[in-house]
Image 1: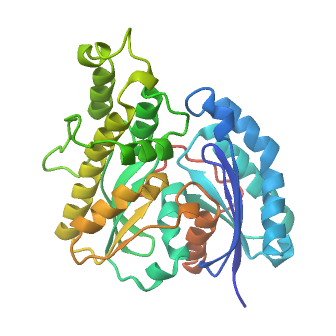
Image 2: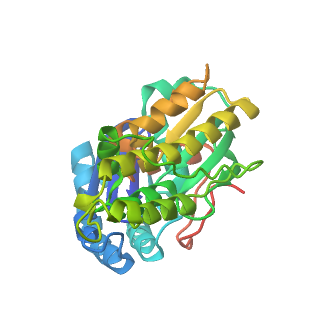
Length: 344
């Protein structure tokens, strides 16, 4: 009999639920985005995110079950994001999952959000035969992590961002350039029209470290926007529409991706990885994918389809399948872990 898991994801500003069969087949993956709600603030407003989750979570769960053509009695376990994430948002999903588990008697599993991003790859056919160890780059609005997976559920953290996450830097620079939130896709489109060599933005290589830093790059863009050279090209203080937005976006993207791609390729070589996984919202960026593929040599590179790059619940259910198969289960006393690391 197939194993069906209901996943629930509310770590930030996406209210999501989905049903996955045997850790591989997505029966449903419903996502209610709050992007329009938070766009007016240029980023996620935590309290408003929590309130929106309260209003949406049961509607989304019901929609996920209906789209999968199953009832709760057909589900074998319930999985929910335990962390990391916004504490208020996490609590909403956790309480919903606990209520369903208590009422149904189903096993409950608390899943690390980053682990979910990794197992989004197992929902694609290409990765299922991959051999360990694999090198994973998790890049999103809240996370930038290099992780070595030596087996299923076995991780070693190599490095991560010391300040802004890559996706966060894209959003902040996009805001400087007058783009709406979330800015990632807008930045990528602008960059395709621009000259990546127009501005010589810094790369924080941080020698002898697998860590990342994007705050200096973000500051360099801010200084370029306010520079006298650009100011003199406009009648007054330049507004975003008077700036060379495409060139700024292209130069920023080139600098950020240069570091991400190079460190990922170097780590894969050093640790003899048999594959490279790219996951998280920024993994949708086509230049990032192509640069890593170009630098990886013969090491195969895998990235999820667009629908599985951003936060979703199918990835939480996919990770839960691995944990359920390994005999893991949590009880109703577990609490959320807003700063929960995937590995140390």
